[in-house]
Image (cartoon, rainbow, N blue to C red):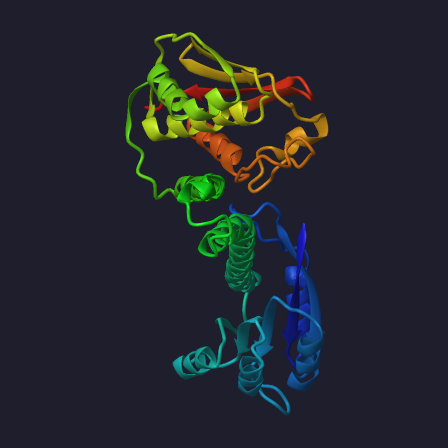
Length: 373
């Protein structure tokens, strides 16, 4: 159970003790929070004493008598407002008038109860105040979390783009200085390397766009009958150069399977898994693609004979911006978000992604999908 601090400021000891008795075993339950809230209750007999307590300890709710010796409740409210104290204030007043309520509200009071009040009236008022405090606190935490995520996102993005941009810039500077003479063909290697770097940056940007569109729900899904064979063949055609360069043998038998899905989402899945199987494979290796339809469920698997993944690294694969860094992967580019996007898409189809791998021998990724609609 979570605990929230409540401070009662009233010059009548009977009122202070009554509030403590009513709230001692009172709890607040809300459907959107996991734990119930109970209360630790402190009391003060004057505004001056209460102010010192408010400055030295965090309170969620303040029950404040308006008529106090010395500084009154309204004056204390003004000080708390100026000091930006986030406590939620419930005024306790013996004068149930519109003027009192308006004046208290203008000075920052959230609610008020009038003397004499029943235990239920007090509980109802405290419940509303606690609910408001929890919602405000949660909103602030979400805002801070959003800022941290944005900062992390920008930091990772700038880090990932910095290296290829610097490389392309250096190649261009060398070409500008004509270090290999005026013949443009002398710079073919620079041009080739620059194109590879630019392609890496494009892949990162497109992966980020896919991820953010899916997470934000802004991507309009266009559901229809999608041929898994067609999407796989398109992916293989796009990877023709990479497959040829590494002399990869692709084994794929079309199974004539269709699924009601968004074609772009299926393409993202096939592109990520097949390109990874090629990229992390050994020269002359194999890639085996298999699709199975069973009980309304499509299973799509891609196996390779590549470098494999250590068992303690498998848990990191589906985390955003997470890349397994080893001697074998040092020269292989990637955004670190492709597999996390695949997992999110699988979730849209009430499915999942599984991986089996043996380091040094290869990996097999399996995606399970159910038709939409």
